[in-house]
Image (cartoon, rainbow over all chains, first blue to last red; front, side):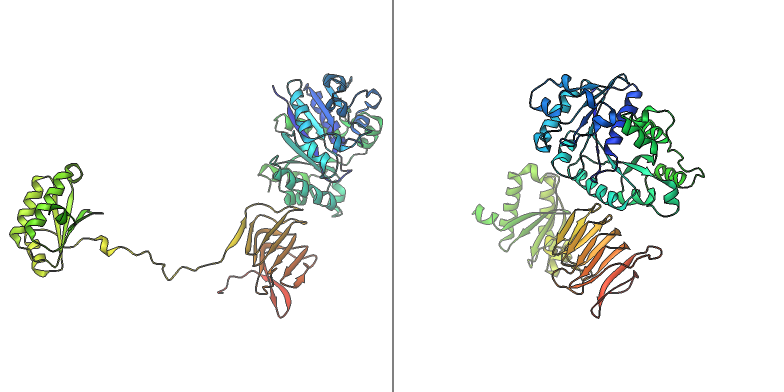
Length: 267
Length: 229
């Protein structure tokens, strides 16, 4: 079976692309999938830190592309899971060290080795984003329920459509249901209505995520955290399962309405 | 001789079959010439329904009868004789032939009916105009989809948005103050008609279709109502 290339992007920085990539990779690997993640953020690498693999980097993406090592040598295996690998970004180079066709070639080489290739896109709409988008079969757009993040996500969705990589799927990250309820945060409905793309997951605001990321232990590795459960649900949806949306609000309401809305076709 | 006669016979296909138009001249010659042509293109004529147009020529019933029989011998049905001569018409009727057919002469003219409105050109955008995308045209612009914040629509004419308008819209960009902007939900970041501009008021009530236009040097938005224009 040939692997699917999933690119995780957002436009705006700091919305949780890298965290999402790391956690989805863990969640897919927990489902006994063979997963490799590629850090596309050359010069500002983070994925290795969040996965806790920083101290094991010998070769990186640019080394592979420039032929200084074999692909297998740059794939760092995560020992906590059966088949999870990371190809880290180079820290001493910049985005121009890689071209979109390099990424396509690299992913094509990996396709027969694994089931999923997750590409973590850097923020922005420049070279790094284009590199990450080029090999994609599926594009996941991560956004927060904040006006600036949604605005950037809209631009990114437009660019993805223009590259004919769409329709992208949406991950709404850091949703705080009590803030939304008080009307201090845009509701998930409003975001979906504006972006008009399919939702694949809602991640609740969860302080465990920050703690886990700092420790290099993605939150999905923990059984209890709500955010981890949300990532596992997304992984199952990627695998084609129908998973109901979590009830993040103790009293129901928003997410009930939202999941009904999604079932009825998105609007 | 034969060639000259042939030129006196025109054969056209019409809806009802074939229409043979003959000119003046000795009937005997014309008939022979016609039969000769038929013989030359036997396959083409076989089984045909034939209408004969003779113009002002006066023809006797006997002449028509002979022609009909000769044609029948060749498996061709003479069913109509068209003539402006009342005598010929009458004689044809006696033989049970039709005297009217929708001839190509009475071609239906495709004239523009008075009830079509000429209309003006417009650009049609069948998608959502997202942030960072721009539609530019000197004509009118019709968008079937939303115009999101950060999206821009700039038209020389009017702008119609079948969706929500939340981006930047500029109608009458070439200076046309009669241009209008309408949308199912009109909440643009920035709206301009010709050189007049407006922003949408905050905290509006229930979204409804609205139309913005320039009245006395000010942009006004009103609820969309159907009215004669």
